[in-house]
Amino acid sequence: MSKKLNFESVNCDDVLPEVKQHISQDVIWKHAVASLDYNPVHVDPEWCKTAQVFGLPVPVMHGNQTMSLMVKVVTNWAYPVGGRLKGMEIKLIKPVPVDSTCTYGAVVTEKHPIGKGENFVVLDLWAVNQDGEKVAIGTAEVTLP
Amino acid sequence: MGYLEEVAKYQKTEKQKSFSADFLEGQQIEDYEFWDEIEIGKETVVPFKFEVKAEDMMAYAEGVPDDNPVFYDEEYARKCGYDGLVAHPLFISQVLFFLLQKGHGSWIRTPGARNPGQIFEWHDPIRVGDIITLKTQGYDKWIKRGKYYLRYLSELYDQYGKLKVRGYVTLILPKSKVDVLRLFKGERALEA
Figure 1 (cartoon, rainbow over the protein chains, first blue to last red):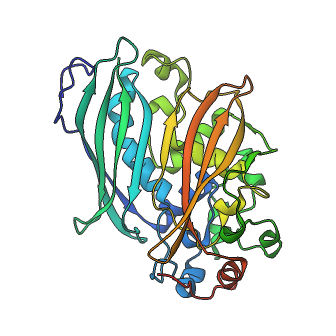
Figure 2 (cartoon, each protein chain N blue to C red):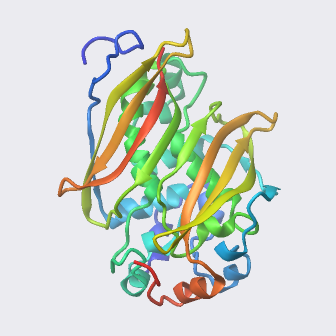
């Protein structure tokens, strides 16, 4: 998109640039420190070998990290022009085990011309793993100038 | 090297350094709330406060990882139309885990908890210098396909009483203290 992004310039079906992330144990540990969520299902590989909370003997990434990376698609797009995320509903479908590589994307589905400062768009969001399986889906409402 | 040593390498902020990373520390189970005991409808104002510092906001974005300069560079953020440094929307994860370290709402820390997805509304930006408090209310709990879901209405307010964020925070939890104790011991979870 070379034109300057604003509410007027956006159209339904516009596809946002994707984000890709490899999920190493280091990436999960850093997110644990950042979020203060040290649940052993994410951070303790030894505990995961026996607890197998998701039926997996390895750590899985935080659901909130998946959501944060889905949001990154939105913030990369809208925040450099002063946009704001105003609402989000995410469903996490599949666990994401350590050493997965996921791709996150979004498309504009609705435009709401409410008035200056209140105009917002609705996006469909998704995250897929390296096998093309959806691991999360959702929607977001984003105000745009 | 154990995971506690691994995560210690990344702890930089004052809050990160003072926060216990050991969710399996034995005494904590006495502070947890369990799915089968939680009362729906009960409202609580969590007694702790979160004073927002720039280092807290930047540390969250770094841990996503998200290198968008609006999260790190106040001057750049102002040029983009904001009134200061921007908090990553999911910075609220850090705020919630900090505020729910023990007592009411500590079920969020339960070993073996699973995240089925979340609903959040952002009403006003969180800014450096805000002092954030949390009001929670048991909203719903249900059983689906043998799993035990819990949803709390969680509202973050600033020092002026302004609503910043409303979340319908939902987790799948072990049903009872007995089930959590199994996970504390590292025994296999009952449900895959």
